[in-house]
Amino acid sequence: MNGHRKTCRRFNEPGHAHSLTFSCFRRRPFLSRDRGRLWLVEAINRARQKHAFDLWAYVIMPEHMHLLIWPREPQYSISQILTSVKRPVSMQALSQVRRSAPIFLSQMEDRQPGGQIHYRFWQRGGGYDRNLTEPKTV
Image (cartoon, rainbow, N blue to C red):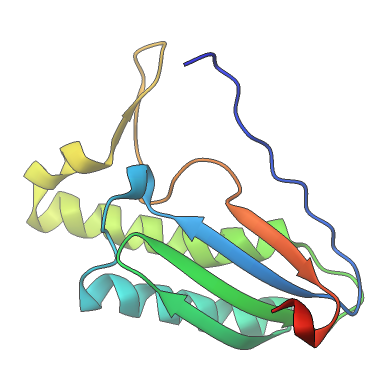
């Protein structure tokens, strides 16, 4: 690997809907159980309230997630919305695994070049974000 990470440019444009896709760490099927999907739905609902967006559609697959949202306020941050959705799920999953299934930690292990170990639920990076400006785009 050459060390280059793909960057995701976000355009927080008033009046645009957003199609968002983000994946589980190493595309592992962390969302294949009801518990993980429930954590994700709860996090989306809390984020909807906090960031004032309408949820038009979502699909939860075993190893990734699709959201279609429409921010209601002229000023918003897709990055902050994603953090509000993803962080609580990661924290709940890591807590659950440490408490009930510590052997599963190896599936979440992300060993850094310097030797540090991080445990991840979500793939690093911003995922995929596409602004939608008209209905036929979907």
